[in-house]
Amino acid sequence: LGVVTALLASEAAGRYLRLGRWDEARAVLHETANAPLAGVNGGALLQARAELEVLQGELDTAEADLDEADRLLRHAIGLMWTGPVAACRAELALRRGDPERARAAVAPVEAEIAVRARALGDADRERHATTRAGELVARVRAGMTAAASEESRLNVEAAGLEAARAAGTAEPDAWLALAARWDAM
Image (cartoon, rainbow, N blue to C red; front, side, top):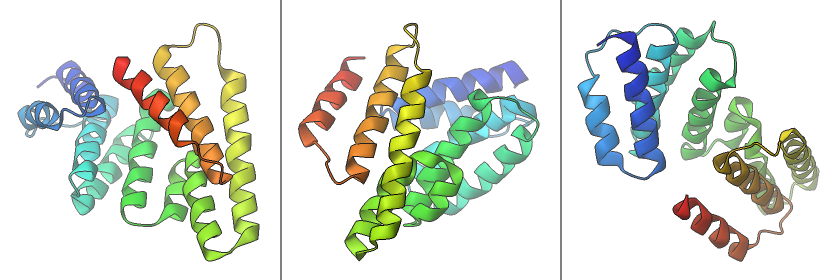
């Protein structure tokens, strides 16, 4: 497999995963199992593989793949390359029940930290996480432009709903409406 093929395979697998089509993602990734991994293309391929592994509960394997993806992406510039790895690492930490570690990987896990702090009666930690979640959403909303994609708009809306969850004001109907718009997209 060439580097372009690895990049295309990672993109295809990622799209299948976002659609919930794990079998197709697994098939694409299986075709690349023996591919030489180098640079951002190899890092992207490992990230897609790790994302599927996290979803399947193969957490140790996912962590090893994310570590190698980090190594390959060390010199990459921009969230296009590093953002998906951070998001997958955060999901891995959440699956392991470690929201603080997830926070270190990617900031929007503040809602999970606030919910846990609320359950434990830790008002200071809850207040800090709620404030941080609100600040992060405000920053993302401020960066939105009229040309933003529908996917970006839906992600920003999800971030807003996570901030509401952090504040203890989760709205199930808003989540259902958002899920319906994701399905329609």
